[in-house]
Amino acid sequence: MKSKWQRRLFRYPEIWVLCALALLTRLWQLDFPRAIVFDEVYFRQFASDYLNGHFFFDIHPPLVKLVFAGIGALFHLGASGVADGDPGGWILRALPALAGAALVPLMYVIIRQLGLGRRMAAFGALLVLCDNALLVESRFVLMDSLLLLAGMGALSSYLQLRRTKKGLYRWLWVIATAVLLGTLVSTKWTGLAIAGLIFFTWIIDGVLRKIQWQQLIAEGAAALAIIATIYIGCFAVHFALLTHSGDGDAFMSQKFQSTLVGNENYKASAKMSLWDKIVEYNAEMYSAQNSLESVTHPYASRWYSWPFETRSVYFWQGEAQKDGSQGNIYLLGNPAVWWLSAVGMFTALGVWLLKPAWLGKRRRLVAFLLTGYALNFVPFTFITRPMFLYHYLFALLFSMLVTVVMLSLLFTWQREKYGRRAVTQTYWALVVIIVLGFINFIPLSYGWPMTPDDLQMHMWLPSWR
Image 1: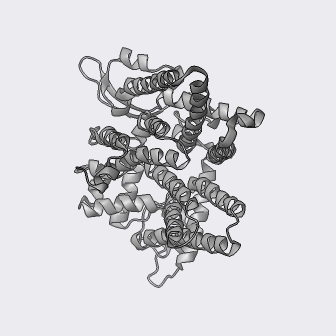
Image 2 (image 1 turned 90 degrees about the vertical axis):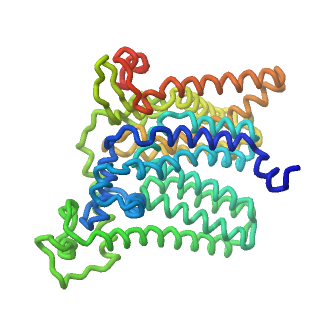
Image 3 (image 1 turned 30 degrees about the vertical axis):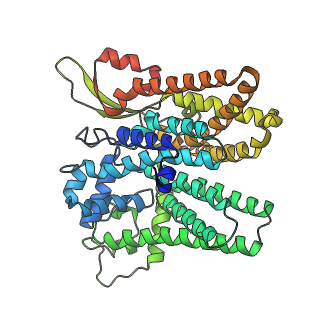
């Protein structure tokens, strides 16, 4: 007879299946290709610079790069081993891969927290599991899978916070939410969209539920303090490690350069406060991002094309084989996932604007998710520097959530009009289409050798190449 904890542990077997498949797809052949792929060259070099102390400059906050350096130090890879990817190059890829795998069951949890059933939660998790773009982004030394996990983790933590009215447990969820938000914005400034969504909803929900204003102010102040501490703390570590002259010197003022050993302006007596360093560095981060407006890239794409993924990103090209076959890795989403999510999102927006009564009790939920989508998508319309398909991934996750909600409403209508069998047939037809789409594009996700003709057959749109 099973014990109580065993019954709880295996109450939802679909989660274990999803976790197993997520780990398998993200960790499979993680050491291939044994080459530096796409932007791995930057993040490996940044981590290497932390290990040898040479100052560098990047347009993003340092947290994830510090974590990569910490992994390199933990496994004794050395500065050169981290930068070159050998030996043990797959070790740095393990953390993004695990983050990408964790995103699958997390999506299941979030959908359940939003009030939907197990079947729809499993479907939403399947969308994440079977998206080739999310798969590729999680298999290399890149920051986006960690960024997505922190952002969606913060959302899940906040949803749990909403269910806890007062007491110690509520404060624990306040702290958890703030820590995840601090991790998020200390990785990329784009994480501010999730932070804004959560804080805005936090205030509105608190007012509607008549939570005492003293409590809301105390929670908000504590959350902001934790976020600021994490952000400032990672910069403190950043400057403590980078004490020698390096490639990033030219971005900084002469006063800053005077604190770097080996710089021509170095003075042993030079002092500069941590706060002054943080202010100057962040100002340069902002300026550097704006200075990229004139830069071009062959695989850049405009924001309005992302929901339809009309442009991929070419990550890697392998050596040609004797039979003419060649391995290629593209950041390219599963069209069944992306196009279904686009239809679901646009349908939800149209219904919410024109026939909101059709949404019933899901109206506020759809509004919340559409707001999350807009905050993670609309700001990119004002950016003129080169942008890529991976900038859409946060918005993609929200479009998946919206789609799951709209499908749940569709299935409710379908069950009432045509019966449960029709719902089951539609559900499994969508599952099959999504899985087949994922399998079809797997060679472009893992870099398996393909003949030129086979490669061309996978290029459904001419703009993908």
